[in-house]
Length: 599
Ligand code: MV4
Image (cartoon, rainbow, N blue to C red):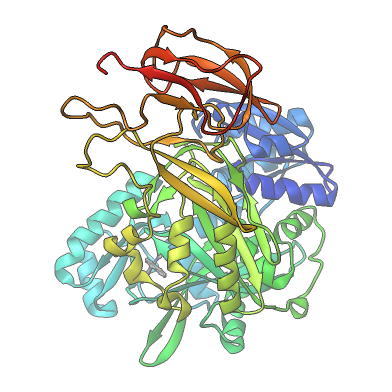
């Protein structure tokens, strides 16, 4: 086993790898950007090194600097996680040249699968079914039209050769949509992969995204760990994943498992990888096609770990040392059902717009069958510079229905203060009949009205049009009625002087201040400043007859060994001051009477 491994990533996956290393008895080296000085992965590692500035290019994509840190720290291997350098063949080669083990497949395997047309050609030759279409790039729209008319037929998918994960993916339902689809896919390929070439596939209507996890060692052993269904996606971003697939039976599992291991063998794969495929239906029977191979550990690997009991990250590290896999295909047994919800800092009601910000309070769910893989904690800052996925909530239970209920229970326990996340979206989606029926929910995910309905109810603001009302605040109290506990939210005028620790369980939120029209009449609270609590007067900070500003300190009352500052609830003159140091006051007693100039 390695003595020390550098983790070339951030966020939850860096923490996941560090945990695996710790369990294997391997020292971990974290790297970080200037934005990540206080990040969780840095705190969790045995040692940490600053890579550089805030951009990915200066930090997590900085090959030279990462290898320099690997050498300096004495790390024998690098784990790339997912994203950043995980599928960068040049990085895998640079590691090899520096004498550092890249925990993952060979650069040759990464290259072979990186070109989608090359991969299709290799797969077809290996007997792996690919979506019918071209295995070579198509030069222009005219050539595409000819090929489609002769061999494929509409509708078609036009995909960027350098693409993957839905980038550079366009659909032409008929010939008149071809030009736009072709040019769109080509433009996106150029933009993201510096490769404008495209290829063509038959377009499958409403397929399921079904992918198979594989693990391979350097001794020719290739096993699959069954499938994951990742059909709940939005703009090609997976949102919910589950294992096993709700529509996959043992026979289909064996069939697609063989497709996956054949695919991995064809590129002499080693390490953890995923064969992505589409499960469609045609003329009443199901068909499964290879889509692409992800040559890395994936975000959603956890659901497979939950149903197989196999630690995919640890196995990936073990095989990178040259050890053979610790189990065979016959040892792989699926048990129960697992679901993963991606907890992104995004606003589903606003077209999944990123919603970066600071986390205030933070509390993760727990209890039976619950796993949280998270890269954040209380006080974490979600930067717009990085991926908005802040955590993954994974549950296991005996079957899909029970796993769904467990997920809803766990989502309800998850508290992430100060941040807009997908938690309410997941709660709404998992409660639909479409989810229960195992549908792909494509219609819901495209429906702006439904997406709006997933937003949590906004905190009620002061009602418009009400007359001469004081500012309202919202306060949460815990009350016990005949011994039964209730959490109540009270919306109304503030307790006088209550702004300084006078009892609300949560921070006081002020409703927007409105202009009062017309003169006359005292503010709703009246002139009396009353004590919010029972206690002893420790200090009197004003004298009778003095003029005070709103918010000025009037008195300090000690209660439950706490000093509570009582401040003026409005500006004016202290007309009465019936308190003295050392006096006992009860809740509701008048501490001062403040009259305004206009009174
Ligand atoms: C397709 C397809 C239909 N026909 N390819 C590619 C990237 C991945 N994120 C989704 N991709 C698709 N490729 C052909 N030939 C439909 C999709 C697709 C999809 C597939 C399964 C589940 C959800 C999906 C959502 C959008 C697009």
